[in-house]
Amino acid sequence: MNTTNVTVSPDLQQFLDKFQPNKFKLMGKGVEIRGIKDMHRNITQAKDLIQRLELNLVVNHNAEMLSYGGFEVHNM
Image (cartoon, rainbow, N blue to C red; front, top):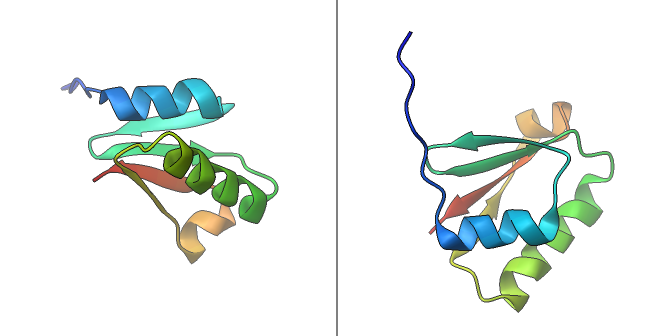
């Protein structure tokens, strides 16, 4: 089985340090936050944190992610 090393940008690392998600999965383009109960509140908090810290990140979510309580944060 091949493993790939995923590098985390400084902005993404700063977001993870401040947001402190319980469950997340690193991906090539960012991170997927999982196991969220209150989606609206957590997505709003993530967007506010990104804006406040002036990070080059964007929040992405769709109906499929809603089924397992997740959203993604990508590098721009």
